[in-house]
Image (cartoon, rainbow over all chains, first blue to last red; front, side):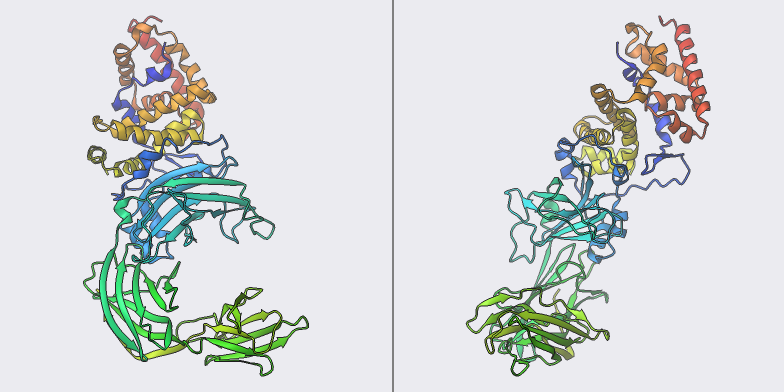
Length: 457
Length: 179
């Protein structure tokens, strides 16, 4: 005989509908609120994504799970609406706009590791230049968060096992324990094709009493996710060719093009090889025909340098993708230039000087230590609206051109009380007079009398 | 989004249908599965499998009530898990409560005839008693949950369920069901 399960399943839809009609709202602590009491059922939104991963992966989803039920699991296991997520990414306007426009690929995968750490990947936001993964885990990830365990995102690999996590970074959202991991793939010309699938690994670590991970090479547990960026998203970009030559302070540059993605925008600049100065920075605003200004990105990469020429190559911005703009104009207001000839400065303890010291920089202290090393403190003032706290590079070289890293992180910038200056200190072991050079990366600041405007769209 | 529109998405093979179902009914489906499996992980697995089954079933199916259809799938998946593990003591208690009724119904009354009997009985109840009965014996809500949900004392819930069970037994006897 069949059991009561089957028999009770013979009830008509109308009675079932009636019983399920006033669906109660279950709280995170697994208690139930009566209908009408603090009712917070959310209106469904017309999501535009294609949940490719769901159908393909649900079967695999819970393989390897064990019966450990951390108290936080249910709290983590909630539905995260795009609107709520959008409110939680206040650190990135472009990403916020993406989510508000329901530009997101649903994932909805979750795991509990053998040791009971819960995680869930809710969404990916993908375009041709970036993958962002929004995930939650019940283990803190940042120093300062409570707990004796921590997580980090391990290697991210493509389907061929190649590590693609080099540009990865984790961002904390305004929702507790909800994070964004993002990988940037750079400009169109340089990047490799977007991977069809990625392996995304969350690794869990023990922390010491100071909150630091005890051994980054020894996670006690891992949660691996296989994610598949939808090609519908992974090819999305708009490119506007500009190719307009401009001249600033006698230096020539070509504004090549503007690439616009849902999550970011990129302006591409090419410096003339014949320039006497290197372009090491610039303040460039993007403005559209409706008066909106797109700021430089405040999180993640906000610019790149050309590896060969050391000139500023790209500037990254908030995206105009979801705004109907007919025109976008780049407005250049100031630049940071560095003379190629004065890039390196020879250090003299006898004269207490360094060659080619940029204007606004001075030596605070120079000490020859008993062990033969030389310690130097350099003070530099803030420039314009921008603040370049790095004064010299992290390495030095000798007269033969051999490069050495400073034994300790050199440019640990210390801001002075007036907040208008910064001080860095570096040490060169086995110092010899007239034998060592540092590389100046403190640029010459030039505020343009008349901003240069270039129509880029 | 209305159920009919979600069903239309399934028919258009638009995978956003799955997300719409999740958005609308995740809590309900999870609750049903959790009631029966008593395992958060198993419940989540049942719910996710429900989405896959919906995707595979619609089309050709075009259910009148997507909520009921999904809920029935989840319940069946959860029952499979329960039968495998038999860990949930609450289900054991529910089974015992119904033992006096269904345990004595002969096999002859399987299927349509039994369905008519059950639904005929449910139709004779007042709504409150019916909802309590269905939520307890179809959805496997605990007495405590029903108490909160219905705004009744637990003792009142137990009393109502007990009366309904007795009525049901008498109803079956009156209908000539061999017990």
